[in-house]
Structures are given as C-alpha cells and as structure tokens.
Amino acid sequence: MGHLDKSFDRRDFLRATAGATVAVAAASVVGAATAPSASAAPSILSIPKDRISLQLYSVRDKVSSLGFRVVLEEMARIGYKEVEFAGYTQNTSILGRQITLQEIRQLLDDNGLKAIGSHVGIGDFRSNLQAQLDAAQILGMPHVGTANAPTNSNTVSGYLAAADEFNAWGQAAAARGLKLYQHNHAGEFAFATDQPSVRLYDVFLRNTDPRYVYLELDVYWAYVGQHRWPGFDPAAYVRNQPYRYPLFHMKDGAANSSADGYSIVEFGAGVLPYQQFIRDIGARGSHVGIWEQDTAPNTQPNPPGSFGAAQRSFTALKGLLA
Image 1 (spheres, rainbow, N blue to C red):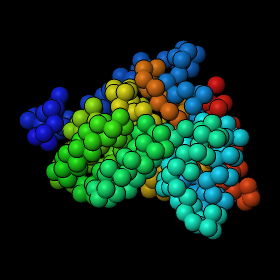
Image 2: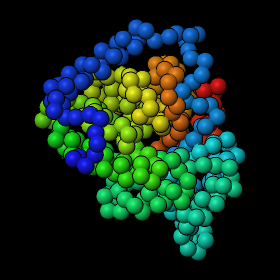
Image 3: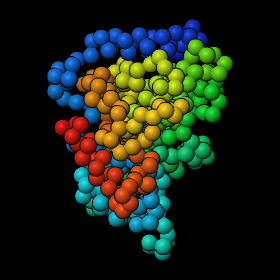
Image 4: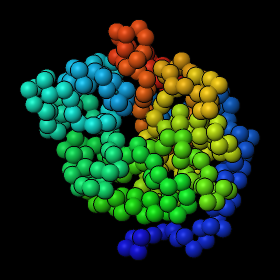
C-alpha cells in the first residue's frame, strides 16, 4: 500500500518466496535437532497457565438457547479467564429483544471475565470496519480478527491483494489501540495454484506489516495443513516471529484416515503433540491459549454437551500448562 510506511518491500518477493517453503522446512529441521528435551523445557511457558480462555463458538448452542448471562457465569465458574466472541447475539426470547454490547460488557465485568478478541466476517470488515472496531472497544478487547481465509483466490497475486487489504484494516485498528488478526484454517498452508513452489501462508506472512497485522494460530488446523501439504513445522512460524502470534486456538485432534488426517475432539483426548509444540515455540513472547472445539455441542453424553466439553477441556489444558 503506497500510504503505508513499510519496513519491508516486495521488490524481491518472487525470488525470496520461491524458497520460502524450503527455508521453513530447514528451520524445522534445525529446531528438531536443537529443541530441548522435556526435562529441559523452559521454566516459564509462553502460554500463561492463568489465562486459559475459550472461543464462545464452542458453546454456541448454549449461547443461543440460554444466553450470554448463563454461559459467562458457567465459564467463569469452570475457571476460564477470557473469552473470544463469535458474534454478539442470543435468542431474543431471553430478554424479549436482542442483547446490547453494553449489556454483554456488564456481564463480562460481573463475572470477572475479559474479552480477548472476536471473530468477525471479512465482509463486515469490508463494509463497516469502524463499527466492528467500535464493538471491540465497547467490549474492552485488545484484539479483533477474522476466521476467514485472507482471500478465496489461491494465487500469489490474490494473497498479495489480501495483504494490502489487511494492512489497511490493521492500520485503522492500530489507530484505535487494537490489534487486527487473522485466524488460519488448513487451506492457507496450501501452495499457490499459479506458483506451486510458494506456500500461500508465507505470502501473507511476508507481505503483511508486522506493526498492523497479527496471526492467531489454530494449532489443530496447522497440523492438518502440515498433513495435507507437508514441508513446514507449525512451531517454527511462532518461534521465528513470536510477537506476531498473540493468540492460539488450542484444539485437539484424533488421528484418522481422512484427507485431513485428524478429526476434532475434546482437548486432551487427541494425539496432537502439544507438549512438543510448546517446547518448540520457545519461551519468547506470550500467547494466550484459547480452547475451541467446533464439535462440542454434539459431545456425548448430552447433556452435558458443550458445557461438559468445556469443563473437561479446561482441566486438560490446565494440566498441560501447569
């Protein structure tokens, strides 16, 4: 973007990114060779054990049927400290109208909870960015982001255009004291259709301004990406730029024979190498661990459904980070 005072440029982009995947793979090999053993793990983890958070999408059925008051009270009782939003609405029959942002903020305060961030549709950023920033400030969150892919165009040019867009949004967010972030799924780790040696995630990471655009690493989807498009180590991205990753989605997966290689399960019930991941990202920076389980409303037995999954996953996360 011409109006941004960039600390990076794209003049050598194509030449540099041609070897990006090789570089990340090499970094992961070096990391594997030099990573400390479990007994030598950092004494201070970069994922704080006293800030275990949750993405409210995990308990979306309860938000819809019982409302924010009941859900936030239960999450605070379990021990969660912060919440990430996935919309600001509940069933209108609960109050006879829709709940307001100010009322949600009061419920957060009443329960000793803080809003850590929010997933906003990328179309909402395009159509009314300032309204989304207003909502973030009312709720007191330091971050606001999207779970959408940067673009549906899986080309280098498409991701370069998306980086421009995110840089502009991030600059607007920074002017309001907020950090804009993008949350990955697996597809961002695919290779560009027009340049098969270039990983799309590398294009986005290289061409977004680190002053204005941050990343929320969904650990589960990163490992799915590694399974589908090998050649990178999820931990290496964080280790190389720790301060760009203020948030993690702590989601577990059970191995299966599907194309993804895993299916989503309660935290602690899967096989993802979280202990190794935490060691390998190193102790620099601080990354808030946010529990998410897309399938939690269908968890058996039901009841307790998503509330039960929230309780068991919190216990497992607490044990991991203790």
